[in-house]
Image 1 (tube, one colour):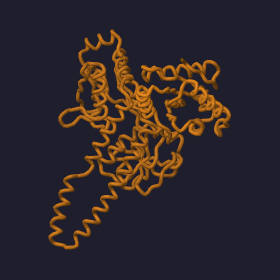
Image 2 (tube, rainbow, N blue to C red):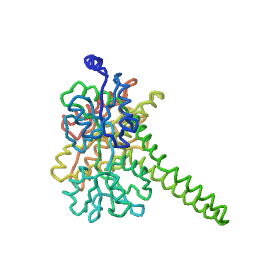
Image 3 (cartoon, rainbow, N blue to C red):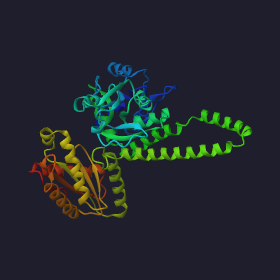
Image 4 (cartoon, rainbow, N blue to C red):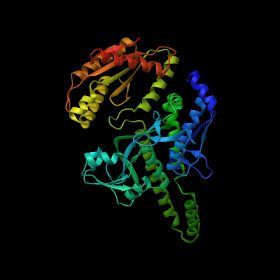
Length: 449
C-alpha cells in the first residue's frame, strides 16, 4: 500500500498524534477518562492497523484548542473535519471516510415531506453554522428559518412546537433523538445535501496526507457500515432510563398491594409499551434504509454499491461464473446545470435512474457512484452479454426526451471481472473504458479487456 519512502517516513516519525472534537457523538468525544471514542475513533483504530504505526489521541477541551494544537505541531491530524461545512484552518482535508445525508425531522403526526419546496411558509429549525442555511435563504426565501446553537436545541424546539421541522445530519439526528428520548419525533424526509467527514492534515505535511489517503482507500464500506451501526445501536440501548424503570416498579409494587384493579392498568401499560417498541423498530429500519439509499435518486448510494460489489466478487470466486460491471456518466452534465439550473440537472438524474431500472434485468443492481456517474452490476454476465445490455441502455437514454433539458446522452464503459483481481482493478478498467468513450465523441460504449 505504501511506498518505501512513506514507510521510512513512518518509521522515523514513530507515532501519529491526532486531535478532535471533545463532544460530538456519535462521531467522536473525549470521555471522563480522557479516552477518544466514537465512529472516528474506531476508524482511527483501523488506520493504525493499516499503517503499522501507533496513532495517539491528544485530548483538548475544545475544537479551537485542537486547531491550535495542529498549527503549533502538537498534533499531526484532526480526526473529523467536515468538507461540507468548508471549515477553515491550517489544514487540507483527506478523502472522506463517512457521509451523512441531511434529513428533515418532524413530530409523529406530520406527513412525509417529499422535498424542500414543501417547507415554504413553515418554521424550520437549523444549527447556525449549517451551510445548507445559506442555500435555503437564497433559493427558498419563503422558508422561515430559526437558528439554534446546536442540534440538541433544534430537536428540542420541534418537540416543544417552537419549530415545525428540524434539519440535521442523519447520524447526529439518530443519536441525539435516542440520547434525549425524543421518541415522538421522526425522520419525515431527506434533503439532497450530505455532510462528508475526512481527516484534517497540516498543509505542509504532504507525506502524511499521501499516507492517510492510501490508508483510507483500504477501509471498506462494509467496515464503515459496521462501525456506524455499532455506535447508533449503543445509543439506542442506552436510551431507556433504568433509574426511572426501578422507580416505576417500586410504585407498582406499592399500588398492587393497595388497589385490586392495578393489574388491569399494568396490562394496558404493557400494551402501550409494545406499541412504542414496534414504532421504534420501524424507525430503526427506516434509518437503516436511509443509510444505504441515495437521497436524490432513491437507488443504492456508493457505500451500499461497494458492499454489493464486494459480495459479488466473493461469490464468483467460489462459483467461477462470469461477472461484468457497467460505468456510465452523463455527457456535458455541467453544461446542463449551467444552462437550465441545478433542479433541471436533478430531474435529468432521476429520469436516467428510471430508464436504467426499466431496462436492466431483475438480477442486476444499480448504484449512484458519484455526482453524475452510475454503476450497474451484472451477475452471471460475460463481456459480450454486458455489451448487448449496455447498447440497449445507451439507445434508451439517447432516444428519451428529457422534460428539463431536451436530449441527453451518456458515455458507457464495460469491464468483465478477471479471476484474482480486486475491486480497485476492476473499477479502474471500467472507468478508463468510460473515459475512452468520452474522448472518442461521447454517447458511445467502450470496453477494456
